[in-house]
Image 1: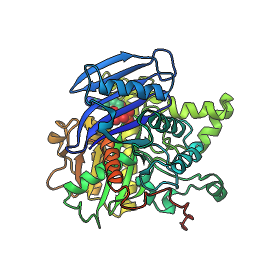
Image 2: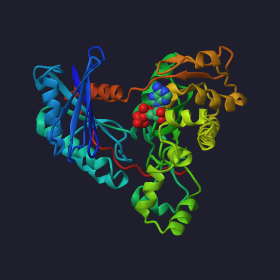
Image 3: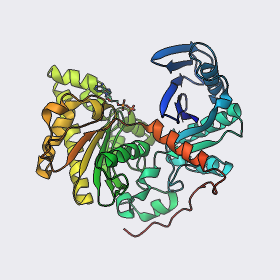
Length: 419
Ligand code: ADP
């Protein structure tokens, strides 16, 4: 079964065609600048890249360009679109409405639309992607949506409720939702396999650190999330490439008043100009900050100290929340590659029984490995994430079960449990 995984943004569309018989990626690519002058498609097959500059004024035209790339020319991988059994779409915000992946129906599209105020940049773009896919592939090809928030839906109210008047939760759904759920789910599954607990995760305590441009940490007990660092939006947590992470909320109102900023201007500063970029003044990319730190740039050095300290503090608090830690997982661009951060974070955690094998750690870049010593009370792993595979697997499962049972629709809004 071939499944096309889609991640649609407002002006971009990423795709991966995966053969689910062997879980191999057949082709992948990216449409950029949709609706903007100079749009182009980069299509990759077997390590070769094929770039075409093709006008794409909307997502339907982007899907048509993807169709061309998949079915014709040098990068052709299928004779006809009919070889593609189903599509799986990434959706950022599932709110309290979608606790699981599900088949796309009119009601599901409506549900994603209703949640747009909570993810104004993402959910409307996902709907454009879904509707364009229906235009190009036809109504009979099943489409599945997989939500970034779903894996976190097991959090208890005491973890997801913020200390603001409760009416804002009731009126607007202001609460912690968490993001990167497909990544946290993937590495949790793999970590449980490595612990020999995949069949029975009962009693396991895992802390996952997804450290990329956007970063989040999750605390997973018995295979289920009990807390995570991102909140109502992906801004919460610790410093990221350009996001501030958590801070004293009055920092926000203080700067707004001093600088005469509107809410959206302040939002842009917190999301796009803060974090590693804002602190270091060098770059949002950790490789650049690392290069500057090596040259003695003090703000770059401070940026790294803040990053490692904040991550270690999160892990410490989740250690308490979980009542211990069996495994610590590092994943995503920084987590998989930046050996020095892993080392410095783990040094903070020695008081919790974490013992890193420094020699092994220094050699691990972008591949799975155990990097703790045999004596360590906590297993420390590097596990490369694969969000597309989670989406493809869910899509396959749902499509294979179509007709066997009623497709899962939007869950009922649940009354919040007492904290
Ligand atoms: P995104 O969150 O956009 O998916 P990634 O998971 O690729 O991003 O993470 C991007 C971050 O990871 C950047 O700060 C980058 O410097 C870092 N990174 C990615 N690859 C490497 C590498 N090979 N070595 C060091 N750092 C890397």
